[in-house]
Length: 331
Image 1 (cartoon, one colour):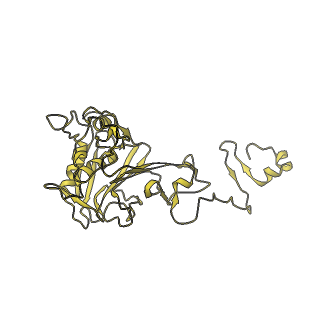
Image 2 (spheres, helix red, strand yellow):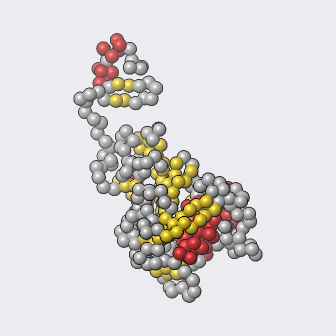
Image 3 (cartoon, rainbow, N blue to C red):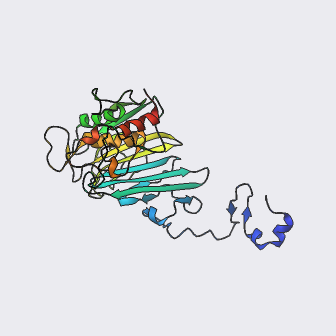
């Protein structure tokens, strides 16, 4: 064995109880030795709490792959067991939540980071006035993107509520084409070097559970309605992004059908939410944009809040556009 001489093994009780590898630092118990007890927070079965565990977990201490992790405000995701990593988002009427799970099997580590907060209903009301979206260049990025010049192919699931595909498609196109009300042309130019293509309807809904949790990916990008009956009452949408290295490999987007009214044009019934606006925001996550926190950025599409009958998120601000160009370059 590397790192211990034959004489040292004969005289050291510690060396007799373990096999150590100098190259990796790994320690392996000999046959018949008792296995190390897992940490107290690593309970068998059930959902684990991100708050109760360290940010970085050694797989040898607690193998989280295939386990459900609960993050801020109830946001939950299943740790990928196929070598991918995952970012989960939920948009709420009173804020948003994020859960990032980085799986590094080569290093034997899983890193979990969370973001989440509550704000007043709709856009935050505060003494700090929001900036003009056409001048606010703030943006935040996620750890992965699609290939530059590529095309995101997505399928649509109408769900029980039969949400109109045209409104979903508008939201997807708004982000990809950088649609805005900041220019006379109705879009920023040049657009980012990424495309999208509708690939037909899907009989299977988005890969999101009834609890608004990211499940096990199925290698199909599906956007549409989902009755997330077990989710918290303020959840409007959930989006999951799976990636390898820095490359996104799948996304799923679900709009809440349970207990929510949706608006897709014409007169907005009070208490309804814009499909186009919410999908535009969620498509920002699909392409690699994260939330921008702070009341001063509340007019940007990637702000983590939306009010009923508010279609403002459907048109990009300068920061939303600048973020896309930083990720994909000009088309």
